[in-house]
Image (cartoon, rainbow, N blue to C red; front, side):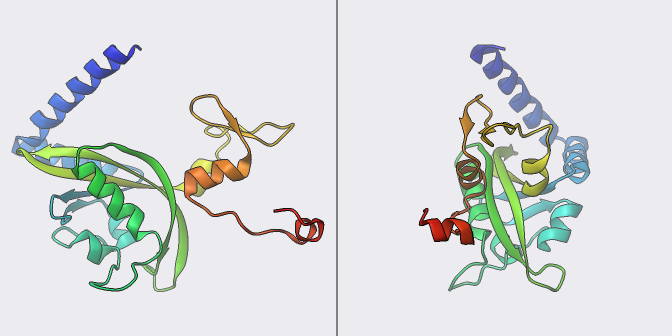
Length: 197
């Protein structure tokens, strides 16, 4: 597919999305599609207020329609936001500005099930116009599943490098830093003794 073909297909998809969201039956279809996704998905308006959250997003974040995204993420009015919340908020803001945010990794500190836990997630976001008003769809997926699935990640058996989408090979630590935003600054006892780092 050429870049021109890709642009045409994206334009057709954008026209379809506008047509779907402009009718009440289309709105029901869009809601059903979000609900059926196998990932956590949240749609927000320009004020970062949640207009729809699918079942996985409601379970993961406690997100509910009408609630602000900041509240769902546990961001206080002042002070430090929970770990990872800024990545989700940033993706939504960038999508509202018209940018497509693709697969940015982060760690979210959550207590949705009563106990604090760190979740390795990947956030993607896309702009969406609903009746001419800017909205964004934010999708969260399990990074552990995506990063460890042998069908999705190719790792060289000889050197341990990982292949990216462009076919370039990278050291595993650099791949994880880029994908999950992890600062890999810990040394095992062997490397610490050898003075590596």
